[in-house]
Image (tube, rainbow, N blue to C red; front, side, top):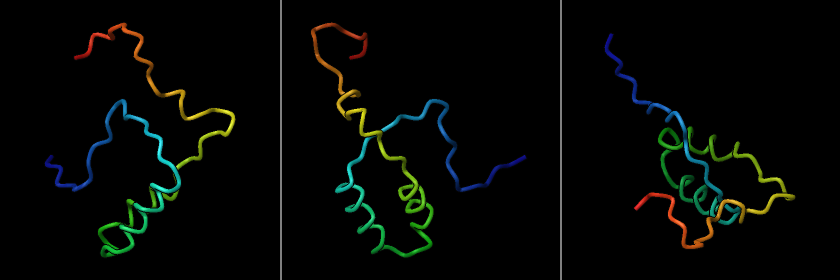
Length: 73
């Protein structure tokens, strides 16, 4: 069976990113300037992003460079 769908496959282990409200607003403003059919799905995804718990700081994902190597170059 041939799959002609334009939708991309979801990665097995998708990365998680933090985005602040200013960045989100800028992205949404840009998308609102594009044709609706091109951006409706993306705008919906952005509009349903979960807010980070205020008890957890965004810096928990920042890696500290303590000189130890994680094996990646």
